[in-house]
Image (tube, rainbow, N blue to C red; front, side, top):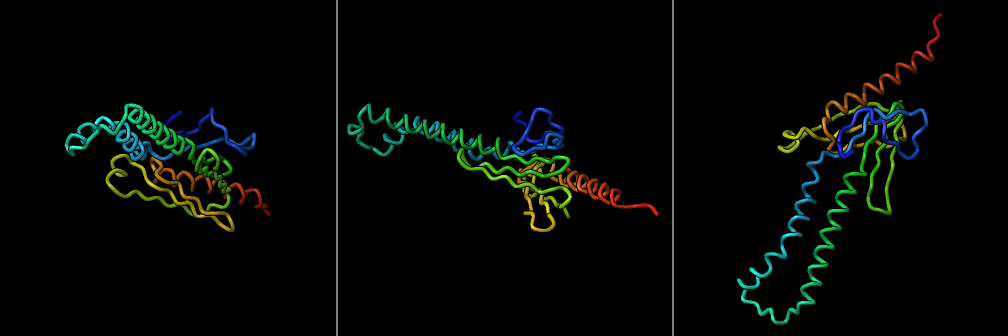
Length: 190
C-alpha cells in the first residue's frame, strides 16, 4: 500500500479507468525523497525543548512570558508539525504515475483542493529516456523518466521513481506492443 513501485496491482483503481483497463505499473516517488519534510517536521517537533537553553544563554528575561503564552506557543508549534507531516505524506502518497495497457496517467496532487491528471495514450508514445544523478539517486536507485509523446498530447515526466531505466524500457515496450497490434490490425495480406 505504501510502496513506490508496484507491478500489476489488483487493488487500485483510478478516476477515469475503463472497466477493461488493467494497471501494469503504479509508481510513486521513492520514499527517500520524503526526508526533506520528515527532517523539517522533526526539527519543528524538538526545537521547543531547546528554548529554555537558548533563553539562558542569551540572558533573556522570561518573566514576560506567561504560562498561557508558552502553552499557546507549543500548541501552534505542534499544529504546524502536524500540518507539515500531513501535507508531506499526502503529497507523496497521492502523486502517482500509472501505466496501464492503454495509457500513462500522471496524477499531480497539489493540495486537498486541487489535483491535476494528465493522460497520454500509449499509442502516442514516441520515445522514453531516464536519468539518475547524484549520490542518493545512485545508492537508492531512483531517478526521472521522461516520456515524449506525439501530437498535441503533453509530454509526461515521472519524477524520482524507483528503477527509472527499467520503467522507461517497460513503457517503450508496451508502446511497441500497441504499435505492433496496430500494424497487424491494418495489414491485409495479399
